[in-house]
Amino acid sequence: MAATAALALFAGCAVSLSNAAEPAVVVAPAPSSSVSSGLSVTPSLPVQKTLEGLLAKVSTKRIGTTGLVVTTTDGTVLANQGADKLLTPASTMKLFTTMVAVSTLGPDRTFTTKVVDAGAGRVVLVGGGDPLLTNKVSKSVYKAASLQTLAKRTAVALKASGRTSVSLGYDASLFSGPMWNSLWKSKWKPYEARVAALEIDSGKIGWRAATNPPKTAASAFAKWLKKDGIKVTSVSSARADAKAAQLAAVTSVPLGQIIKRTLKLSDNVAAETLSRHAALAAGKPGSFAGASANVKAWLQARGIWADGARIYDASGLAPANKVSATMLAGVVKLALSDEVAYAAVLDGLPVAGRDGTLKDRFDDPSEKAGVGVVHAKTGTLSGLAALAGYLTTASGYRLVFAEIANKATSYYTAYNWLDREAAVIAGCGCTP
Image (cartoon, rainbow, N blue to C red; front, side, top):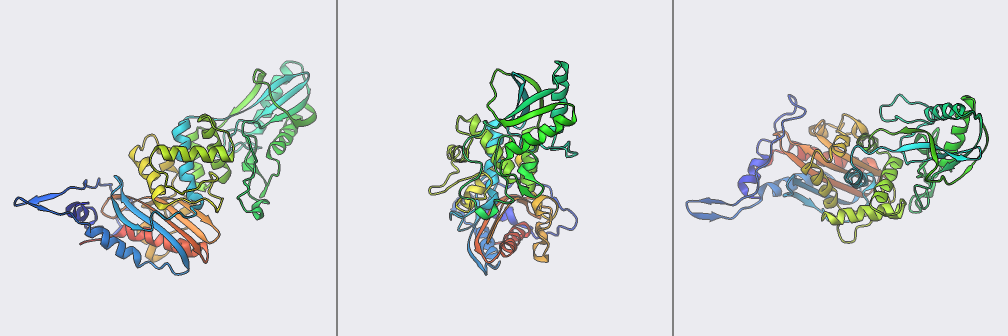
């Protein structure tokens, strides 16, 4: 960036935020060379040096490895501290997942759970990969479909044809491969949901993970049918005929709303489910391997992939995932370059001190400058954390940033570094 452009970018950034939590966004001037009195002036980046100096003052004590990048929305680098190191991103992986999903499927895509007539007194419950399907009717605006509603509709259709007794099959064949990722820690199995095309309540029974989500859903559906006057003689796995007549169905909210919730709450099973849908739409298997390969191909096609990077899931639960801060910043820049197409992702980013997984963050006085102006996806695993998104400085400039902290004594230690670095950027009054 030219010195004049760089100076304009940060001059006055230390203005108090007390009167405006969300300052008007100013478009930063593009880099350029300047000519005075016919003499060419070589551009320099004093602001980058100053900003990096301020960021370096934030303690990394008890954190083994960090990676950080700050750029303008057009990609001009303002700070680079190990930006290309390949580190474990935890749930910031969901930035890749949701970008690929909305790009591939579109924000209006919905997912249908249905019941079809298999003949000979048998019906089949077919999972359509609705990540927010519930057992009981929910008051949540995100959870439009339930087995309770589906059972009522099914019972009405069955009674209309004079039937009050059926055998029940359940079909979760939309997705393939294992429901549990072998790279996830086995100690998580009691409470971390499996991934299936048919599951209810985010794959949980209370706080515990269902060991067989499709069977759990089918058993719950059978109970609802019984309450609605339909006897269920048996429940078993089945494969529905594609030509079977549909008896009833329930449909999810649009993908855009699912993505918003997925990012705000960092919903692991929803992220995995959406990634499978995107893989299927791209002609790849609806499995961990197929979904990961699809995300990689999507990033490569947009010049965001880095040599040596590794992606094994969509949620970021696998510690073996390795990406860089530069990659994370790359997808954020892409989202900001087309705010209409990627509105669901941008709307879903938690806001510092306000909502989602950042609601209780940025709570230290040294982090105050970030409250309300940092919009970012969080990531947390044992001993590591990450933060990636965008922020608006006190003088109104929108900047992209990504930070990853690995090998910390605790994720709280990592949180402090992440939040304080972001606050430094938001409140920077950098001058040459």
